[in-house]
Length: 174
Length: 371
Image 1: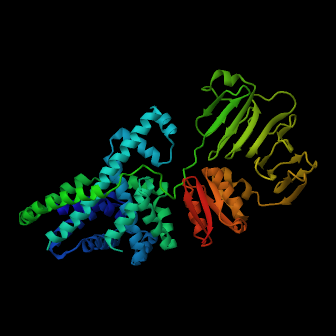
Image 2 (image 1 turned 135 degrees about the horizontal axis):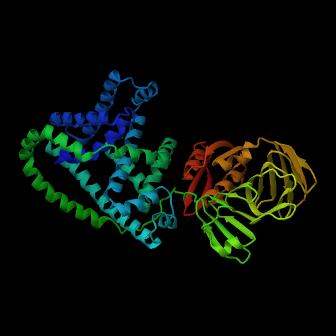
């Protein structure tokens, strides 16, 4: 239960985080899956979400470094890793990844017609341009956008759920 | 920062980006943005559309369901044992959660869909084609050639004299009958014949800025007519800026030769003529032409330029108005070379990062303050 919530929240974030340094999707997949299995095995040692979060990111970083010993990692990327010991840089990565995850979560929750419209709107297209590109009326575009934002609000409600689940998680694992 | 803090900030940025933040949330975000210059930079990095696009593509590479299936297989047995151990906690907590969500929801005020603060509408490359009878249509795409104009309305097409208007925020490339290319900047109006007849090629730049790449034709000089000034050329590249609301007409020659009607002067490559509309005088000086033609490649380049002139350019690109809290700020001098971003706030962010100026947006008005 709680484990699934943690997984849902962090899986893609960790993938994108890891993917920055290892541009091999299947390797990223393996690394991230292992992280969760390890988290599961060590679950008793975590008493709060703070620890889980830092465990996941620190382990991801270490796993990348280990991987790079086998596969030559580009020097530039390696430098970025070193820079990450700086707390602020680390925060930036995670905030960015959290943002991307939210956007991805929202976009992938949309019905395909609606998603097309929202994608274009996000890319900066105006209603009439979207209508023209998709060969639909401006009104349909507007309706799809309203629908998209309604769904966003639904998801936004879940944000509270997530936070409560975190609380639950920390109680449950004690 | 705790994970909760980071999630909170990411959430605020996400809501602002999608235009779904409540005024309180916008306030909250602004406070964070003002805390450190770095926060603002991070914000701009995050909402950069190019970055978002490539990141979303990366996300699509990973299949969450599949991964969960694999992880579940590896942890299944262990999960079950824990599950029974905590089952009773779940039951109690689900009740609590339901109650809490309901409570939190009633706390939430009705949200209106508002556009987020700190968000400038991206420019749209749209142009309007008109004829003398004032028939008009908007041109699709970013380029129009009088020769390959099959899709246009027939009547409009048949008109001998045409006019293209590029509104605020737009940018457009026009190919004339003789093969001359004209790049039109925002808020620019140009009148031109469908086909050039007679012994000269004549177009009228009513107002605005355009870069001409004129096809060579020694027999027929190319003339850019303007209320105040005529430019006569043979085959050449040059930029002319002649906005109705500006005091000066600035002609910058990149290649070839241009003759000005004002003082019969001939410009050489690399020279710039500045014509003053009120005094009727012309001054010629040597300049770095790149500074005046970079807009054509989607760049904003300025060197020791007054803030007011930089922001005037931005207001045309992004269709916003700048209001200065102090006159003095207008005269502050900046230099820069940057990309014309989809979101104008990236540019404002860079200007802010100099630590001198600050911008506060209210709808389409941006207040310029000292930092």
